[in-house]
Length: 84
Length: 266
Image 1 (cartoon, each protein chain N blue to C red):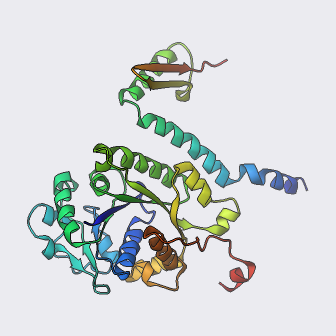
Image 2: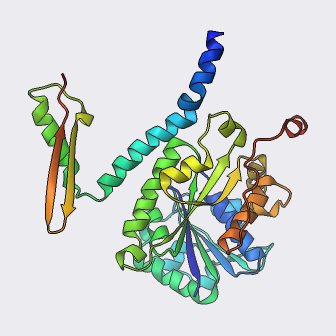
């Protein structure tokens, strides 16, 4: 009975097609952002991560580097999520 | 002036050559003078799918390098007088496909043909690059599956930034999504992404949906583009897709889950 209940509960949100769609949305959005950015940004992100990793343990996706252009100036945004 | 259409995908094995064969044959059967070119240097396969593998004398690279002229290299289809095939080279290096060389060949073909179909190789290297560079329209062949959809998005990015139209600031390459190997039963069960899911992720509307079908393997086994199998679901779906490409409005077929009776009797 519990199995049946779970089956109905999970069918909508957790079916494999929805998992695929959600994963794709995230990676595609990420890669589209990267597409419009200069090639050095990925290297910069890696180097920054290596520096930070000397001091704290973090994963690759805890460091985000983004370059935004607005009019005649650009903003280099560095976002580091430190562990608790 | 011919319209140039690239059939591309990024990922291999999703149905580019099957689509190129069906699409070009379908256009030719409707009376349009059509040429289909295999850009997969070293892995020639359009010829065998179109049943002319033993008739290749000169290939695309021979024409680019001036060893043969177009008239010598174009293979006339035996079933449809409006259809011509330009085979890929099986031995040359893929670097032989230079932008200038490909451009010159397309330009010459463009005088005589209504449609030029460029069958792109998988990947994003020279063959795929030159196949998409001169395109007016693209058919992005995608399976409802994560790696195929991701690669299609990558291909769309390349079309939007690296094609001649993008580089020269012209109207962008028209994008058409073709979903292939679609299995309505699995979609209904939540095992496979739906048409809307794929359109939503890629931001492109479909021009057709080809169902997973036994007729596709049967067709390539025989060297008959599947569109010639007029009773097959895949053949009819390709015919619909071509009608839409030419401006007709046709509803999608073969995207509903098979009814109980059909499931029993199929």
